[in-house]
Length: 167
Image (cartoon, rainbow, N blue to C red):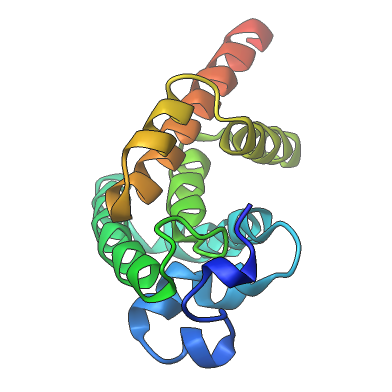
């Protein structure tokens, strides 16, 4: 866990509003949530998905996610440098993008959404192999973004398994 003494700058609204990269990497402020900022960022993906999904075709949505991932590599790199900590917990753009990907492939319905959310948070927190390996060895913006994409992949595999058993 990162203590405030490890940081060059204490994250605050002033900090995240000082540069667009900080605002995006902190999930438009959701990363300032005092407890479990990753959960707050993941929750933010729900209204973003409900707003964005109807605006795009499936192909356009996937392209938007690819763009959001590439953007995330840059914004998380910039914010990590400014903070002096490469993967600070308040940088939640990685959770947002990865969970948007999960929601894109999740069947409709409240229970599916709850299951998807629970599985994603589990894999993002526990980091089973190889997620933990990449989390510990890949640094910078790509490292921040990539381990959450792997957590999304594990989540989608579990959802597909559950769906195959139920159908």
